[in-house]
Image (tube, rainbow, N blue to C red; front, side, top):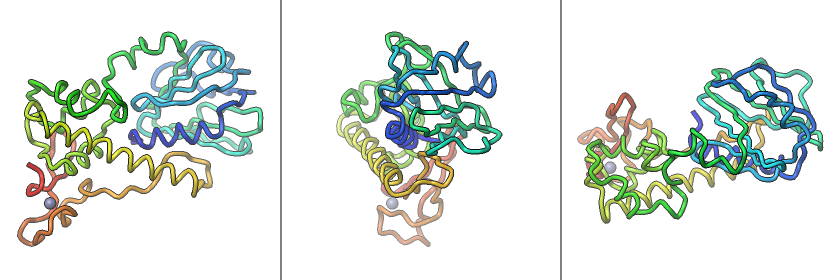
Length: 280
Ligand SMILES: [Zn+2]
């Protein structure tokens, strides 16, 4: 499933190809994705110029020259495919096809169809039902030690679950939650309410750090490597704890035979990976 750094990378890759360009043709190949597509979706996009592309949480926001914004989400399996020209044959799950004035082609492909697209007026974007209740962006100025501490105050859930809550901070998925807690030296089992002061500073900084590093890796993937099918946003990660159960902890110089290395824990049905020596 694409996480925030993947979505950021997709948005940057799309921006490189789409900003300033006119959509000369838009083809809608089915009536719905996760939700029905907007009425006259293709007709309302045809002829529009793309002004800017940005991200909010894990949503893509494609701003058009008539004040409308395409609000998109990749869901579980959504992919954006960018090619210099329209392929001779479309793939089965290419649900939307955008032809640009320079001949380039952008396709939204989604086998499982948990992705979505909507068309919203830019003036009404903040009030859209999918966006209005979202918490702060992890990389924004509104997210820092004190704001995180305030959001966690009185919370009786484990910290791992709390940082997955989109009202506390947006875009932290299961993988980044484990990685950030490892870097902050905080146990995933710790009561969220106890993350105050210095602990909140460490956790906010660790969340920013893991995301910034992953986005940098995604940026390199855009520059150095174009996949044959034009797919944007997937790249190699180096996890420190995620999916490393039983392997040596990269933060401790410990005897693996004695400590057992990285541990795995099920929390709210999701796997959490952590080091019990380093994370308290
Ligand atoms: Zn360790």
